[in-house]
Image (cartoon, rainbow, N blue to C red; front, top):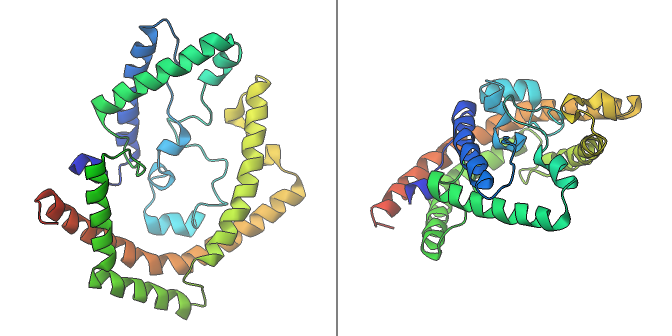
Length: 255
């Protein structure tokens, strides 16, 4: 239960070590059925702040929320795209379907053997685990300390002139999504044309006018995050503390 509910904030080395084991298992499992598999770690597997070796304060000072500021950043040891896609494109449809079925089976076996990946919150839980997890989250949210912390966060943001419902960061997030989607489209095109997409940078994809617009968004993001994130951190820190308390109670059968 502890492994299911509490994964923690794993660093880059821990994440890469986990995926090294998983990839070794996947490669052997696929080969046993006559399929090739190129081991890789997706860029989303590693937290960008920890990959950069920055504290949360340092990260905010340089990159804000990390929405518009790290669109073309790839953590070392990871890849922007799945290298197996190139092989699959040239594979007969029936064999490609067999490859996918085998990979799904191999991944299921790897999950059982190594457990869920570090920092992955969206896990497949049994009904009992899901119910217990819901009880923990509900208890944390209802805890008077968290209620007070939420009110303090709201006051902190509003006193600085920000909407406590995060509408400001939502606008930035949507803007970042637009640029990210265009960048990922360029990455996909490069892969299909056999070019090295790992070398792509923002300046290779966007016009001078678009880069100017993006720079303005980045400056706005960093300026806002420097003010808003200090309001968020006390809430986050307390949440982790209280979550751990209720997790311990659940594991002891007291919740």
